[in-house]
Image (cartoon, rainbow, N blue to C red; front, side):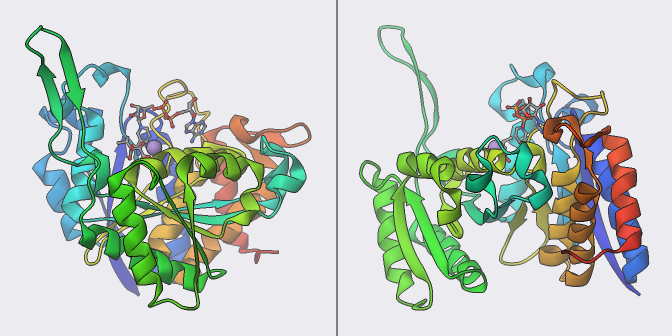
Length: 365
Ligand code: NAD
Ligand code: IPM
Ligand code: MN
């Protein structure tokens, strides 16, 4: 049978609780589909700072680079919030993404029929939403130089960042997005702020140029302020959406609520070559950490994306996705997606129910 090496990074807060569930689901699915794993668990974020003094130890990076895929929980917490930038848990995550070159971040927002009541939007608005948000992940204001702090002559402090995109960075995410749109419903909406920002003006110009190579995809453009409104006015207007690093960060949290909870959205971060990083879009949720309240679906669905995009194991990926839907159809909910008439369970028990659904392998309805 096939064997893959997977780097596990539980991280901080709820990270260990959700990774434990996702790992169990991967192992069971592997047993049933003829896939073996060699797991290597390593430290990142606050856990790594406490143990080694840095947020991304060399061992973590080299382990990740040598593996087929990385499954990540989340990093960060109150304890490290006032650390200097280079010693923040989040800096470790950004370094990992940059080092692995995972420039393309897929964040699918799907409203599952049994969860339509959990959406904060009206049923007819939320029902049937199925969009793919593609976020550029290794450029823009997150990494732009110059950046930093300074002091004016009068003693006043200032701080600054740079939103910057080179043509090659825009072109590669554009080609990636057009190819994803081709495999979906053929509609691509590029979100920018080209009425104000030069970086967005070049972004829009390159998307228009590259569109010539994809005549089967219908390209549209939208300003980010309008897009954030349209996303809750009529989310079904969107098929594939592509945007820069920071707009994608913000819009994906917003899109998650359309589906019922931030605890439902997985992600895949992919490079041209080498391992991808698979993680929920949410953070370490320190407010509920250690209480067995976390929703593990986003991480379990990230494990499915790991199988599909990281290992090319489509059948195993579908088995997990079908199990998620089956668990929801059988009524099991964590508190963030609970509604009257459903069964409230903790993270651990939800994991056990997902495993039963993996085992029974009910096809998607
Ligand atoms: P967050 O996503 O951690 O939490 C926001 C809210 O959503 C909280 O009320 C939390 O309890 C809830 N929530 C999040 N995930 C949930 C889940 N799976 N189930 C149920 N409820 C869930 O965002 P935040 O509070 O702004 O950030 C907390 C920490 O996480 C910060 O240190 C931040 O930097 C970090 N963070 C890390 C990542 C990552 O590692 N990829 C992503 C976002 C934030
Ligand atoms: C995310 C997170 C990260 C980001 C932080 C923790 C660096 O919010 O993955 O969405 O901003 O990319
Ligand atoms: Mn985010």
